[in-house]
Image (cartoon, rainbow, N blue to C red; front, side, top):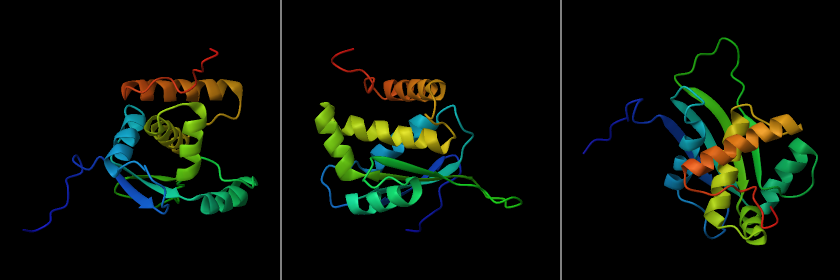
Length: 166
């Protein structure tokens, strides 16, 4: 049996998944791909490619310190790809998302959320950053949160910003 390359339509999103953490309960490639596709739906002409790297606290802390001057292991970092002028690529390269497995799982427990739902939320959050969204001011934060809520709802995941007090 010979291997064949998937047609562009069949491989609308290429996901390079790099698992560098020994944490339990890390989502499968299929789960990550489902969440990524949901975040991209209607926002980007495909095909597209991105890298999603799941790391431990030490690597995440080093990245957060180097790129954000914050010395702790955050939950997610996004690194949008900047295509050099004059370079043509066969698909749109979005960039890299780095998730810290232990931080994601600790936050989910602390917030009383299903761990898979928190993974989904932070994956969607990272994809939206790759697409240029941010939360630096109140208006942008509201726009990004609204997009996250809509994407997660399309996946059957409740609003991650609702609390018991709301």
